[in-house]
Length: 426
Image (cartoon, rainbow, N blue to C red; front, side, top):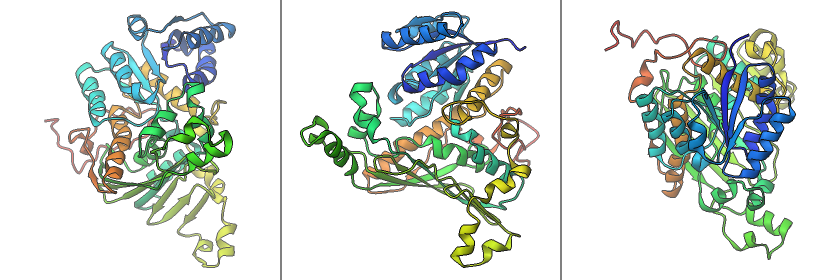
C-alpha cells in the first residue's frame, strides 16, 4: 500500500463537512490519507469534526481556529481548503507559502489581483495548487471529453454550460447557517459560481494548453426572484424583504477563444427550477445535449429527419455509446458520495498528485482562469454588457505546455502541439 498522504482540512462548513464524510474518511480508513489537522474560525465546528473523525475509529486530529498554527505543522503535506469564497485566495497563498500542496475548492474571485497572486505564489514557491472542480470528473463530461479527443465531434465550435440550481432556501438562511452566499447575493451582480460549468468545457477546448479565452461579455437580468421568495416564505416584514438584492436572477456570459470557439454559460440560482449544468458540446460532426442526454452524430440518419417526433425518440440515447466511449475512470467504478462519485474522483486525483509529486490535472493557471470569470463578469455587467479582454495568466505559455502529468486523472491533451514547439526550451 502507498504511504498515506498527511492531510489538513481548512474550512469545516457545509462543503468541508460534506467532503469529510465522503470521500476523506473512507480514504483515511483505506490508508490513503491521514487526517493530521483541522481548522475553522468557529470552535464548535472544529470540535464537531474532531469528534466525527474519532467516532470513525481514526486518530483524533489536531484542531485549531488559527491557520498559522496548522500551517506550522511540518508533517502536513497537503491542505484541502473549503473556506468562504472571499477567503479562498488568502488561505491558499498562506498554505503555498508554507510549502504545502493545496487543494482549493471551487468559487469565483473578487479581484483579478487575487488570481495573479495565486499564479505568482506558485511560480515563486513551486508549491502546487489544484482547483477541486469536481464537475470536470462528471460521467458525461468525461465521456464527451473522450469522444472529442477521439474525433467523434469533428471540430468543436461552441459549448454551453450552466449552474442552474434553486438555492433560495440556502441564500435566505445565510445568517442562521453562517453561509457566505447571502452577502454575495445582496452585494454583487455577476457570474458568481462559474467553475462547475466552465471547468469541463475549458478542458475540452484545451484552454491553457493550446487555446485560451480572449474576451468575455456578461449581462444580468433584473433581480426580482429573491425578494418575491422572501415575501412568500418569510413575510413582508422580514428584514430581507426590506433590502434590494443586487444579484440578477439570470446571468448570461459569452466567452470567445483564440481557437475561434465560443462558449455561453448561465447562472440561474434564484428561481424555481430543476438542477442542471446544461452541458452541451456542438461540433462539426456531432452534438451533445445534457438536459435530454442526447447525442446526434453524423452517420445516424434518424436525427437528420425534421419531424419533432423523430428527434424526441432519440432523447436519452447517450447511454447507447457508453460501451465504446465511457471514460476509464467511470468504467472502473466510482466511490459513493453526495455528488454521485465526482467528489471521490476529484479528491483521488488530488491525493494521487500529492503522493506521486505530480503537477495537478486542474492547476493554478486553470484556477486563476476559471475564478477570474466572476470578476470580469461583474465588470461587464456593470458596463451594460461591454466586452472585456480576458487576461492570459500563463504569460504566453498556453501555446506550449510541458508540465502536464500523464496519469489516470489527466484531463489535458498530452500531445506537445508540435507545430509550435522548437527543439530548444528557450
